[in-house]
Image (spheres, rainbow, N blue to C red):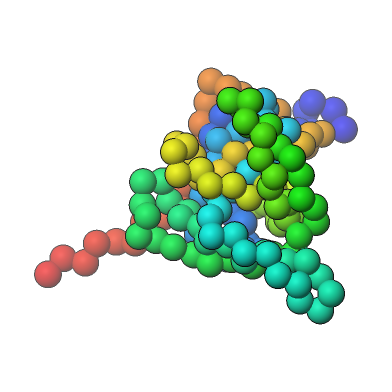
Length: 154
């Protein structure tokens, strides 16, 4: 694959995670992060039919704690992750489908509370390796902002 075949992403993109049945999420494309991370809390591990799984809750919209979605996913790993501040944390790792515009592919993602962060999701470099380049001067090059429902005037 040549550079001409790669997707060009902005430093932030609207993404979808269809396996988790979440509304579109504004993600920061973070080449400094190895693994992608989703804002998740109340993470509860459990075993179902011999498979390790997790149930977790997500506030998918920035600055909106009223919208709450409960998700369930298979666990593929549990890893010690060092964040940008140097803090180490054990995180559950899931695999899920990432959708940006018309493009979809599987990615690994860690689950961690991101209440104090501006973005509900980080799209790390492993998720875009050999698939995309990042234009750090631009935003929303592929993922389109979700259409807002029209306001009903009375």
